[in-house]
Length: 94
Length: 344
Image (cartoon, rainbow over all chains, first blue to last red; front, top):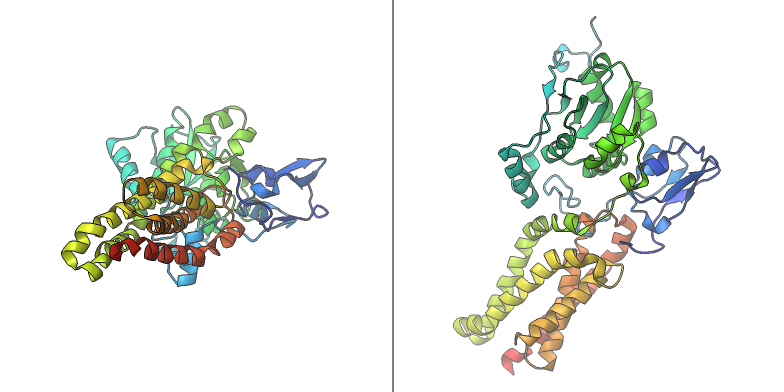
């Protein structure tokens, strides 16, 4: 299933990339490929901003505003409710 | 040999547990495990459904056996061990406050710090000769593999997303196929979330239903109001609740639009038209009102499902939440229009 187009904050600095291969290893939606010792974004709109790639890039070549794609969490934040999302302490998911 | 404090905090003897005896895990599920899974899925005792963090053994592992890392949500551990029958493995269970790997990784509890501390606390380096950890891929949002290596000496390999792929992953020399690294959202995974959606929207829906049931009483008196419009309101709320919490998630890929508020609006309109056929609304204005408040209400309910999916982004959620004022207006105006057949 595809979500919205042209909204995600994912950015890759190809100059800084050393082609280590961690980003395709950790991405759950095949956003990256590594070819010729460089990573490339091949499907930006599939990105869910989980932040796995950012966390595991050893040279900090990737940036994203990471967070849960959870409207309930945003509403809860606005209303000042404790639970941040369905994955909060009070409300486990899965 | 007297080790420095193994938990990495102050050098107090009390903070270093004596060498922990390693508990054993088997692949079999007991009746209690199955019952526990159902309870957790519906949301009863969910946050206390955990196992003790620490090092566990499957099948009498040796110093060369692989080390798999997981979270201490009991359902996670149970699903993991079920797939690993007949293998010699170490299982390192992190303290994630009884939350599954992916959610805990997002929150940081399945994280670099906890992993490094747990390696030290379990004296893992003395139990295995190698220095490799196999982590679930969905732990990656919380774990910086290069930092784990620097801090603990253990290198990280990310294994497949699903425990069921672990046997193939291990047997192929720790090679993951692209399919093992993809997360989808098939019908089964969507449906398994619906009990929690129903559970958590129950209170707001009950409030709305009570309001719908008793509001007509203000005009017509309690008995007449409850008998006439009240039951229709209850039926409508029930249909809307099930629509937003069960039908919407089930039909997700086939509902029009990419945004969940759009998918919900289409479903709500369709449900309202179906309901109108049953006489829940009579006359053009009431039917339009019904369509409006259903469209807006189910739109809101399905929009709240975004947090349960495996593919929605924060940026997308921020864009969608802007529809809330329109949804509120739609529900209020729609209810007002629907109620015009009370006094006409």
